[in-house]
Amino acid sequence: MDKESPLKAIIVVTATALLCSVLVTLTAVTLQPIQKAYADLERIRFIIGISGVEDSVDEMSELEIIVAYQDIDVRLVDLQRGAFDSSYDPDAFDMWKAAADPQLNVPIPADEDVARLGQRSSLVTVYLVRDGEQLQRLILPVYGQGMWSTIYGFIALENDLNTIADITFYEHGETPGIGDLILRPDWQAKWRGRKLYDEQNLLRFRIIRGEVNASSPDAAYQVDGLTGATVTANGVMNLIHYWFGSHGFARFLNNFPSIGDM
Ligand SMILES: Cc1cc2nc3c(=O)[nH]c(=O)nc-3n(C[C@H](O)[C@H](O)[C@H](O)COP(=O)(O)O)c2cc1C
Image (cartoon, rainbow, N blue to C red; front, top):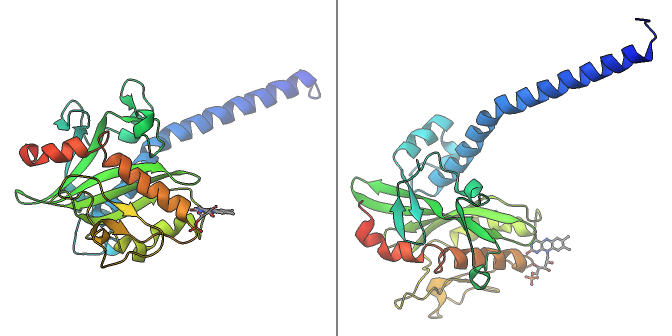
């Protein structure tokens, strides 16, 4: 074939393009499990961070975090039944992915969808932190719509299943310096010790505008607002309201004292 032939140029360009696309696909496929492992490790880091370990998670190595995670009892919960479910391996089940799978998700009724999710996985991953047989903390995933993005976090409850032990947010797309005030440790510290439900089992938790009045009877259920970022703060309150409402963890938390040791 003539060196200058346009046909040769087309063949060379096509072959190069094909080779490149095969290489890119191969790289993406090979890296997928590694990327997933890193994403999982990142999530595990946040779970350990609110599990009550004595060391600060920032000072723990990846190995120490993985070792600490081995002690956590990971379970799947069928929220509609309010009971543990053992039809899948909890370590392999991805509830966030399942939320988009019509075989595994359930629609959220519009009047209950305060977190603006549309649907969620019917099974949800929960994390039981135990000391021997005794439950220390229950860590639950929570997520919902902020101002610009879906905000993902975990909340740790004390073993009364009502008092907030800690909160963490590990993924969001809110504005740096405004909506991302939800990441501030001093704000998250204000959640500790607050309660979700009152004695009548009414969900009383609120993120209010301004500062909590410590002498108010509602103070035990309230966290200070974020001035200038009220839309994101309301999104966070709404996602708590969804996940601790009747379509979320409410039934499971009510049943837990009788099923907790299963
Ligand atoms: C470019 C831009 C980005 C903003 N990003 C956020 C945000 O991420 N979260 C938020 O709550 N408010 C954000 N705001 C502010 C909201 O529009 C709104 O004014 C604020 O949430 C109201 O809070 P305040 O009533 O406490 O002032 C942003 C505003 C602008 C102009």
